Image (tube, rainbow, N blue to C red; front, side, top):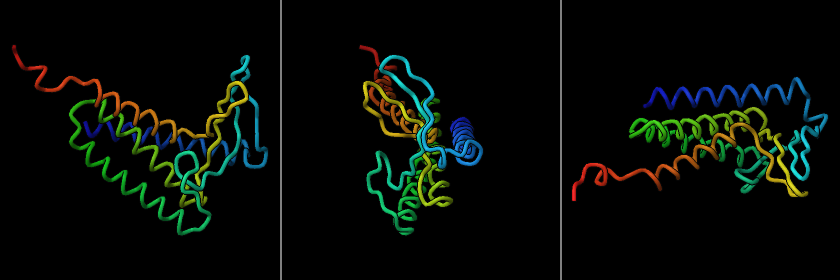
Length: 165
């Protein structure tokens, strides 16, 4: 299971870093700022440059190098805990979900060390309401957490599989 989870973690990390490189240095989104992409009735999807100095939804934001270092070290510690969990994963879904979260966390840690903030640029919106601006690492983290919650809620217990009435 470990190999499966680590493979996904590396894939998420590669996709995240490649997309950030493209948005920052090829497309030059920090200079452009905003690019409308798709508008289907009330639904839209744009590229909008945002530097996130906090964690999810910008919470715990701080501009000082110390706050960025603390957030990065905290994310690395959590990734280490999740890596240990992955080594003990009981099924593929858990290993893949943990791999997605680890790959996303490491991708955002790299941003914090390189730029002092996380580069976010995907902007989904509907009826004038904008969800938070995110990146591939954020998407992988959210999907991984949703998969872990789903697995915890809906996986049959070992007792239920092998028990007879």
